[in-house]
Image 1 (cartoon, rainbow, N blue to C red):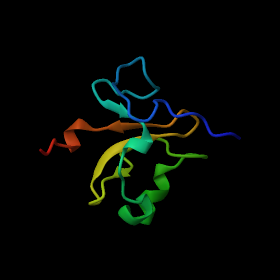
Image 2: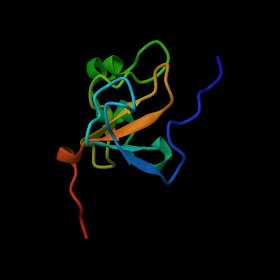
Image 3: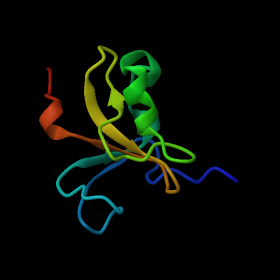
Image 4: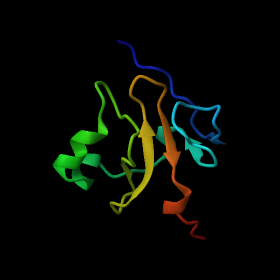
Length: 97
């Protein structure tokens, strides 16, 4: 099996709509996974929860599964049998100037 291309090129984002991917991302920001700084999921989540993030190949995107460097969930990576994309949850982040 070959890796699929990312949904968006690095450095780009789109505001999600019902036309984008198979889950509801309306109004959420969709990002390239390489543009997101994260904490290792294995370190951030309890093992029982960690194993639920994955489908047969990669991340299913059924629950928030991406952690900031401080260990807080802020996004969902979707990459199991589809092009990799990160859904940024606006209700979980804030702009800091």
